[in-house]
Amino acid sequence: MSLLFYRRPDYVARHPGSMHPTEYERCVKKTKKAIPAELSFEMVVSNRAMPPCSLQDFMGYLLYVSHDAENLQFYLWLQDYTKRFFKASKNEQALSPPWNEDTLPQQTGPFADPGPRLPENSIDNTQDGRIDFDFKELPLSSISDKMSFMSGSLGGNAVENANIQTSLKWQSFTIQPFRSEINRIISHYLNPGAPRELNLSHKTRTACLHALQHTTHPSAFSTPASIITQTLRTHSHPNFIRWSTINGNKPRIIFGRALGLINICCGFLIAILLTLSHQSRWWRLFATLAWLLGFSFLLAGSNGICLVLYVTHGRHLRPWEQFTTNNASTSSDLESDSTTLAGSDSYSLSQTSTHAHPKPNTKTRHIALEAFGTANSYGHEIWVRKYRAKMMIRKIFDRTVWVQNESIRIVQDKVAWQAMIWGVIATVPLTVLFLALPRGRVIR
Image (cartoon, rainbow, N blue to C red; front, side):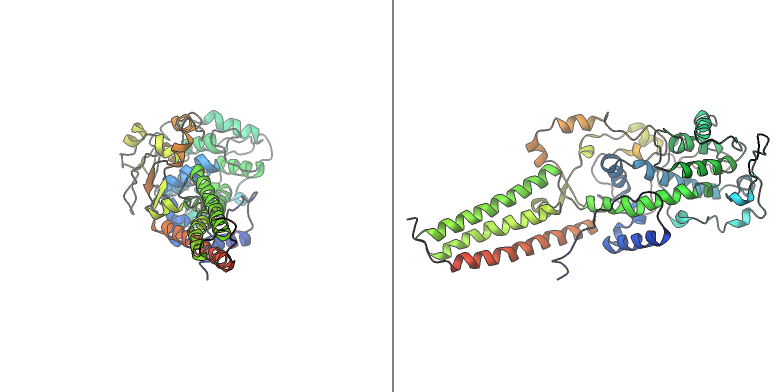
């Protein structure tokens, strides 16, 4: 009975601003109930889910569909930064104590002390290198930018502009570890008008910049990190999983629905003509097949499933997967596995995971996973022009690839079987009705 009324994950509207903790917990529980554990947020962001739900697929969805990839880019950077910060020496960590507004001197005039005051037992405020906010237990990002933090001067002007626009007058404490990296983060994500500006309120942005003037401790990002995490968990991730269950592009799904309506109409035409004829009523059973196929295609298409692609366990390639080529320089940059953890603001990580899985035979845009870069625009990419020039018939019968994620196939199984069962339920009464009608003897 549950199969008849199964619903794939619902679309979740974005919540304005920060959520109340009770509401946030309720949304998280609702999401976990609707989404299989193998497709959970943790599995996706740690790149342990198979395509089409890998980390690269998630980034592609945010970049090309929902247009808020900066949230995941910032989130992945912060996970990596938190790990690296707590691997630094205790002396360096002492220069950037955890952010606590109550322990800092208030600015009372132009000669106020711009430097941070080290709270007592500042190092003991953390346990085992973990900090007290939502993302402390989440996995380390597997993607990094090799050229991110090579210059301490990068982002300096942008930081000053951000301070001016948010009415802050203090200067940052420049001897703290990772200060040049923090400056680049401000210029990329926090500065008003930044290429990857986060969608934060003026109050949140100002509070974060104020904290970053005092310390480079990850806790200075606690407020924006909480908002970004809430958005990713309760909005972006559920909608991404819902989108990933669709196995056909829009032209193919519309074509499938139209095909279903045509079959239903043909079924009625066959049944009416045979009823009005002198033929035996059992000939009317030919309409049953048309009705069954028509209702099944129509109901499956309403949930984004093409039954023809479902039978082959395939899905259409996304437009950006068809034409985008791998960035050779990015791939070579990611080959390095050396990591500088203390006394420096530069690092590089390999794009590997402890839970590695076979990569799909598709071309991906790795540059979107980098923490630093240009704005998240794609109008200049070659696939946009080529896909628009593609004929409609070619879009309908586009290239396909195997659906590797078993959990996605299970969801598609439920949607497809549900459509076929409801197709049978709708077909049987119509068949019985037309079989019960007497011969019309109008058409010879």
